[in-house]
Amino acid sequence: MDSPERHSHSTHASEEDIRNRDIFIYINGELVPREEAKVSVYDSGFMLGDGMWEGMRLYNGRWAFFDEHMDRLFESCKAVDLNIGMTRNDIREALDHTAKANGMHTDVHCRLMITRGVKVRPFQHPSLSQSGPTVVMILEHSKPVDSLQKRGIRLATVPQVRGLPMSQDAKYNSHSKLNCVIGCLQAEQAGADEGLMLDPHGFVNTTNACNFFIVRKGEVWTSTGDYCMNGVTRQNIINLCRDNGIPVYEKNFSLVEAYGADEAFLTGTFGAQTPVSEIDGKPIGENGGRGPVLEKLQKLYADLVARNTR
Image (cartoon, rainbow, N blue to C red; front, side, top):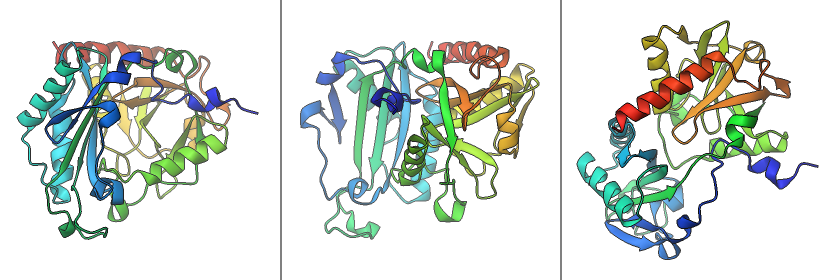
């Protein structure tokens, strides 16, 4: 029988940091102690998953790829008529204020959440949210555990798929994450760490939490992007490949090609690039999913982060 630790190993597994017990959380312009941080049960995010969020990293006192995250956030909110009520600069100032209040400078992760706000009655229609948006910023001291790089992530292909844009477009980084939660549960029930999700046509797409890449004969492959989150780290990796002479393709590919990959890895704001050691019980490559291409990309990405947060 698998131990609880087996199932706690995921791309968001972080080192324990006791400083997070006493953090201040930003809620609608106020800094509130963690144990007192609350939103209304009438909030549209709690009630319906009606909201958008961003995950960001603070390095050396600066938010990595801030503009790219804001591009995605403001575009998503515009698409669903959610008025944030803050400018990009307002958000940056609030993030910096919260980080300063918590004595945070580097290796910090932020969950920025915008919902449509508190409803006057507990029903679906957006017009019932009449008091303006709810804005929450949770900043934590957060570093990935070493085992993510040493052991990698084990994936299981799950029945839950990433759907068509007219059902719920995966480009929305929305609070409505049940699709991904189901994928995660299915993977754990199969004895894996996370779920590998296919697109509606059966091609390899993404995981329940991160974007997915493979390496075959020196070429980097990832999905077309039609059915997955337009990840900031995903795009940075694609750009780094193009800028450094590494062949990269956004294309349809099957599980057969994923199983036969020389290397495989996940991308995300928190873990950056995490090797995939196996898929459906089949080992990837000869070194737990790692290889020369991933190692080169990890160095290039670390340099990119350093330049972006200089």
